[in-house]
Amino acid sequence: MKNNSDISFKIICSLEELIAAYNVRFTVFCEEQNIPYYIETGENELNRIHILGMQGNEPIATGRMCVINGWLKFERIAVRKAWRSRRIGSKLVNYMVNTGKDMGIFKYKLHAQVSNKEFYKRLGFKTKGKIFIEAGIEHILMIRKDDTSEYLENKRSGK
Image (tube, rainbow, N blue to C red; front, side, top):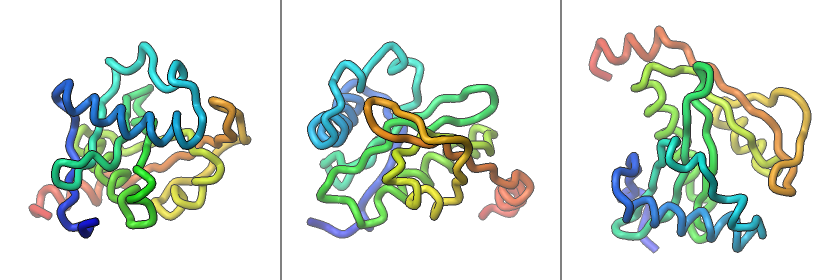
């Protein structure tokens, strides 16, 4: 397995890339976590921004997001098992946050599996509300609000 330096993330813009993202999602959610395929896909797919993480020609991570009432909601964040514990998930979420900032959105939310709560806390998310069940798994709402002035200053100064 190669190192993390040649990993890239991009907004999906072709059917081939979307299929690669589905392969990652179905492996993680359906095969590993036993979530039924019909839950993993739905009518929302076409209304989402999909992200794909690649290492060379190999799809290794994916996520999707959408704007809801001024918040950028992150969904279906997945990293293939062989790539976990290598900061790929952190890089993916940071890419999604930066994409949101480029869109002018500085508030983010997600439904985190409770087992991943600490991962998202390390990325600046805070828990909100009570645990609930989604797809048969315990989840909790997590939110993050970033300072717009710091981002705008960095953009102005070329950082």
